Image (cartoon, rainbow, N blue to C red; front, top):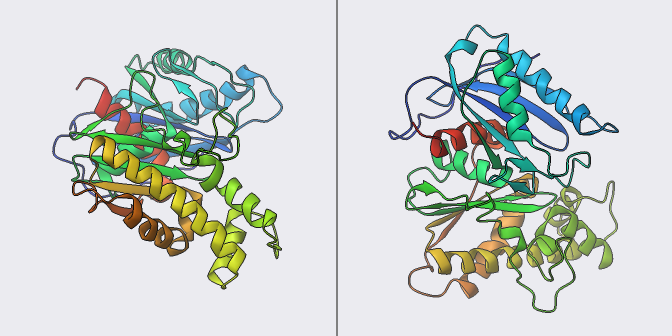
Length: 328
């Protein structure tokens, strides 16, 4: 177990001010946990690699180890709620997850299993499940780049493309927890098929996988691994094929951001995830193309900014979702 304390900015005044939140962040490579204070400070942080080659119970065993680590903290008795953020798809109405990057979990009842494990360690506390895009949105609105905005779209652009919505200063996860899943808005009428079964989705154009695939198809020769990071490095060095791949991704993201802003009048779009680490290589084409899509008076001033919480976003997001969605 690793233990640390990470100082983050103060929360919005409306955040509940009592008790700790158990935060669990479940992804394809790691399962992390922390006890999160009302000011966003994390203590007793711990993590395990996500198991491979095991069944569903084998994967959950790592979650149970994370919870056991947290339960060993002297602060454990102060925990009053739990937030679980998970890679998706999720169905928060049923408390289940079917992450594309955790093959052993299909409709796995993670919320009920976590609740039972918490109770086994003496913490019979309310638990909520959120998809990773919604969790990231909750985090950025609480302590990050969307703080102070009543209406925001937050996005994760990585191996996939996900997101979430803040509407009227409230997190809006939708009935199954998938509202704001911008990656599967279609932006290309005759575009290529997407893994979701649709066609021309943002994810099929702007994900890290899609950027690398497009660059390779157009003749890019990687110096090392054929990844979006490699394409970004080539673009920053002036490679025209790499630049074109990022321009295409930026255009897809701009079209989706403009469509979302037009539909629900968001004021800001916050973008995080591994592809966003490319910085202006990604953000400049988004902003350039946004001028062609966000033309109506009530959307033309929408801001596009990078997420600010970085590696904290998963755990802070799980806690923030619990703070925002569970009764105070």
